Length: 245
Image (cartoon, rainbow, N blue to C red; front, top):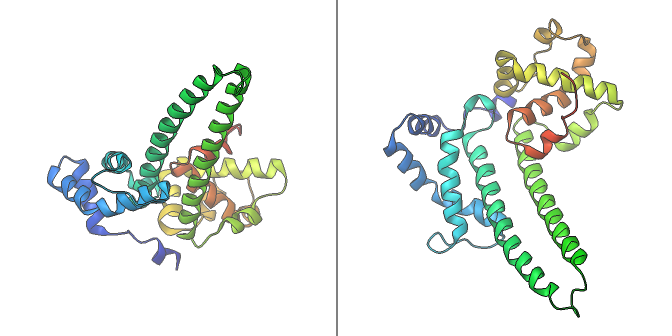
């Protein structure tokens, strides 16, 4: 079942992306033209409104992001191309909106600061700016988590599965994270997780100081960690920092 869910998303699409990466401009132009509705849809999901390809800056940002996704896509990182492109497009548009709103809001706040009746001191300006930044960060995290949830589904996993499989003790979690790093850094092991949807316990047994029983118990959790390490998950990767590998 997992293999069926995680088959190559579209051989012709994959081949087109590779051709474009290798300098085939016709293949690149065809991809960009064919997937404009996809780009507009990604932009609409972020903006929560209809995006007009002929008028909205967000579409242009998405178009550039899609082109960049073609260049930076690496099949061995695990994500299907369209999933990868969607994440890049959304992040670029969020960055664009953040910059636009930041400029407007900061200008407004700075002007308001001059009005003593509405803004008594610069501390209020600073606090308002900090609150705005926190809201944008929270938005960014939600988008990333939604994308990761979609990725998990291709492996027959849910966020609840991963949460329930998470080791309860800190030392056990750190041990699982170290195992995930070992899998990620070994191309053959990583491929078995990303392409076949399974944790290669037999092969791992010779590489880690962890029992097969423990590996099996933490299987879902370790697979999720490998997906995070293999993907473009800025915030989720913060969770893995600080663990010695």
